Length: 136
Image (cartoon, rainbow, N blue to C red; front, side):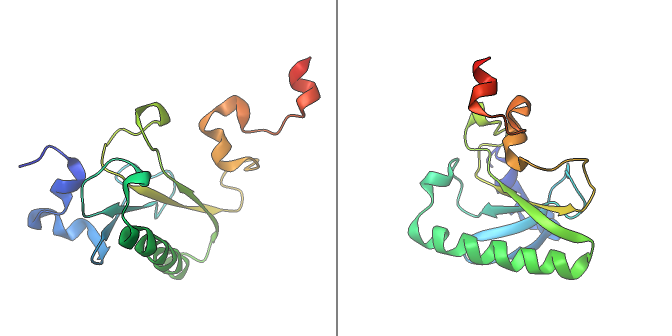
């Protein structure tokens, strides 16, 4: 048996955690959600990087993201936006080395100022600063 957490989730005893699957991906809610309904899209094949997806997986991932977006919007009418994120590699914060895509529902007012969104992975870079201000 593999030590990969996401490979284990595909095991029959964890099947209840899977909310959707197709030929290439399965979907589950994040165990440590950033927001309610934070969703993970995970390839069935075990590999680490987004850049290792094959042609069929690349085609399928967009369909799965759109389907899950629609499902979340049906479940919660307070959702007004989404962040889509991938931590690709250890230095990008990837802690489970099996590719997974985060679909994070956002709601108006969930943080004071969401401007800069995913730029917040480096907190000092989230807010836009003019180049001249950086040179001071």
